[in-house]
Image (cartoon, rainbow, N blue to C red; front, side, top):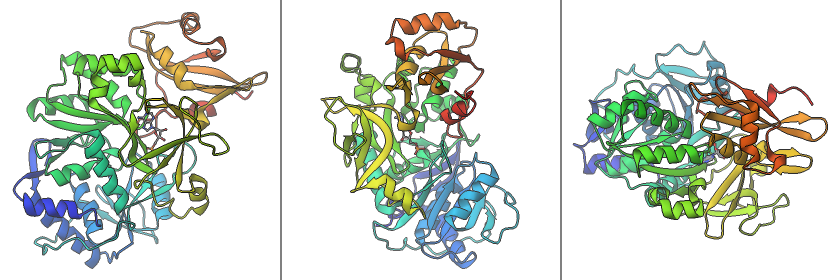
Length: 499
Ligand code: AMP
C-alpha cells in the first residue's frame, strides 16, 4: 500500500483541520495541503518528467514544503531521497549521483553547478495552481519509498532502501510503542526532516494533527520554549544532545516543560545523569526510541511510564536501557559466529522486523554483509536482561580492546558524566604499544567548573575496575559532532598519536 494514502484519507475526512504551520502562521489545512501535493505531483510528472521509481532528492532545511514534496513523490510512485541539509554540497552531490537522482529540490536553487546527471529546482518556485485532486497511485508494500542515507560516522554513507511497507510498520509501531498520536497534537520539526523527525510524520498525518515548522527551521531552544508556552501540545523528536541543551536553556528561563506533551529522544546514547536531570525539571514527558536507518526508528522503545517510574526504573536500572523490543520486532543477541546468546551476555544486536530495509541501494555486498538469513546485523553491541530490557553497550567498532580485554566506552562515559564538573565526554581507544589500545577520555568541562586529571582518575578508581580507567585525559572546548549531533569518535581516533 502507498503510504501517501494516509494523508489522502485524512484530507478527505478532516479537510478543515490545521495541517501545516510555520510557527503560529497557518500555511495549509488538510484540504489545501492535498491540493498543493497534487499540484506538485503534476509538476513532477509533466514538467520534470519524473516517472514511477525515479529518485527525487530534497536538499533543504526544514520547511513546510518538505511534507508536500515527499508526498508528491509518493503520489506518482517516485522515490524520495531526503539529504541531510547540513552536508557540504559536494557531499550531497555524492549522494545524488549515487542515488541516481534526476531532480533535486533545494532552498533557493543554484546550490549545485550545471550537472549532466540531475536538474535542480527551487522549492518555493511553483507557478502551477489548482491541479485536479487525484488519489496516490496504487503501490505494493515492497515498493521503494525513501532512500535513507546513513549519517556515515564511518566511511561513505549508504542508502538504506525503505519501502512503503517499512514506513507503515514503523508508523504503526510508533502508535503502539512510542506515543499515541491525536488530532490535538502539534508536531514540531525541530530536528532534521531528512531523518527521525521526518520519518515520524506519518502517524500524525493519519491522526490529523498540526505540523509545526519552527521559523528558525532548526533546533532553537528559546523558540521551542516560546512555542510550548504559546501553542502547547508539542510533540517532537530530539537527539539526546538536543535534550541536554533544551534542559540547560529551560533552567535559565525557569521553564518547567509545560506545553510540551512528549519529547521522543534517541539516535544516540542518553546518559543516565542527563536523563535524570531532564526528568527532574520536566517530569514524565519523555519516551526513548532505539533504531537505525536500516530499521527506521524501530528496534526498541522505553515508554513514558517506565522512564518516569522512579521505583521501577531505579531498582532495575531500566533508565539506562533502551527499553523493550517494539511490537513488530524480534531481537537476537549473537556472538561473533552468529550463535544466539542467552540473557545477560553481550553480543551483536540482530533484528527481524517488517521495518527492516530492503537492502542498501546499489551495494549488494554491504547488503549481504548486513542482512543474513533474514536478520539485520545492526553493528550495535548489547545484551538483553532476563526481563526483556535491552542495554546497548556500544557500536562494535567503538569497543576498546586493551590487553585482550574488551572495554565498553559507554560504561566509562556514564561514570565520568556523573562527576559534577563534567559536561560532555567521549571515551575512545588509542593505539598503544604495550596493550594494543589504551583508554582515552575527551572531556568538556561544565561552564565555570574545574577538574584535574588526578581528580577524575580518583573518581573513576572508586567506580570501575582499574583496567577500564582512562589512562589519559584530553580537555577540549567541544567534541566533534556530525550534523545530527552525534559525537564523531572516528574523528577523535583519527587525531590520536600512532601507537
Ligand atoms: P542512524 O542510522 O544514523 O540513525 O544511527 C543509528 C545508530 O545510532 C544505532 O545503530 C545506534 O548505534 C545509535 N542509537 C540509536 N538510538 C539509540 C539510543 N536510543 N541509544 C543509544 N544509541 C542509539
